[in-house]
Amino acid sequence: MLVLRPVELTDLPQLQRLARESMVGVTSLPDDTERLRRKILDSSVSFAKDVQRNGPENYFFVLEDPSTGRLAGCSEILATAGFSEPFYSLRNRHFTSASRELNIEHGVPALSLCHDLSGHTLLRCFHIDAALVRAPASELLSRARLLFIAAHSQRFADAVITEIVGYSDDEGESPFWNAVGKHFFDLPYAEAERLCGLESRTFLAELMPQYPIYVPMLPQVAQDCIGRVHPDGQDAFDILEREGFQTNSYVDLFDGGPTLYARTSNIRSIAQSQVGVAQSGLAIDARGSYLVSNDSLEDYRAIVADLDYRPGQPVALSPRMCAALKVTQGNPIRLIVL
Image (tube, rainbow, N blue to C red):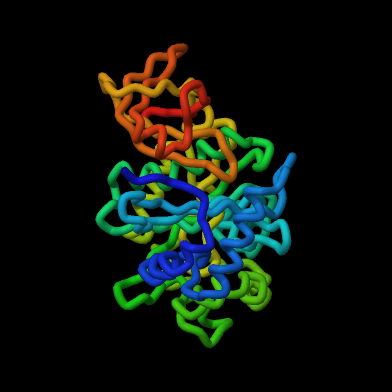
């Protein structure tokens, strides 16, 4: 049984392993000891704070096999993107020009640097072992964050976004970066993403062009990358799309990957999750698989469990499930169909 829980400082060595294994473009999971240590400590402070509205907090989770102590993945919620510095992205919209004399009106798609998405809650840092992709564990790692938001809604914004890693080839080359960003930085794509993870996007965004980039003037191979998902990021995209997230007119300023957006109250695992009462028992006549969590903060736990859930009745959990969730008889739990 895998359990999602808040990260701890003792997880640092394994977190470094996950960072090394993550694909290029996951800038929120840098392979840097001190940066990861700060991320863990900031997360611990965030879980412990008494928060009444969304601020700069980050909530970092790891997916653990309690029987071995091995971490199989990690994910994170940043309560407010752009709280301390602008959250830059590229807005992809049509610019319309018209001539009355010629009776011509023409729209041209153009990319403009912006920080329109600052203020939204940001899901980031998603990484899972390759063997668990498209398995229930992947759903747990991604969607248990949403159950946490449901339980502590005052800590988060009214809208949630996430950036999906854009296309790069097997050699780590991004056609979009090569056509756009590389002209303003003497850096390969992988190095630009690494620096962004270690520092911030601000110093890179400040050097990006301040005027619109007309899409038809880009090479076709770069145009094809706009809104395109990296194959290794498709699972993360699909999970959130089933949750009600949608693509919008914003893309990543490095690789052109899509941004997903949803109103918090409309997200499936938030709007449709049910709260029940735990009942410890030995026998469970399982009728379906569920994501199950407690509603704690620092002791937050979530698992995948086969249950016989009936609305309005106590939810029978095995002793092993209760231990994994850190709940006892009568404690509230939150659940949704897997």
